[in-house]
Image (cartoon, rainbow, N blue to C red):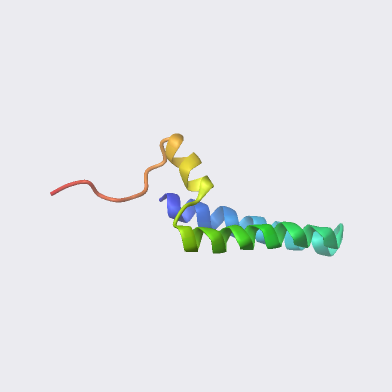
Length: 67
């Protein structure tokens, strides 16, 4: 569940910043680059701040703890 939320937030940030770059200022592309850099960093280090925040708010990771 957390993984889907993280992907949804990242995708939304990228699309919103692209729209803002087209209609407001091209400087919003820096935000797009920032999100991309964070995605790259999390793929290399396996650590994501948003995932930690969601965990503290009690959002489950969707794994079953049984057997």
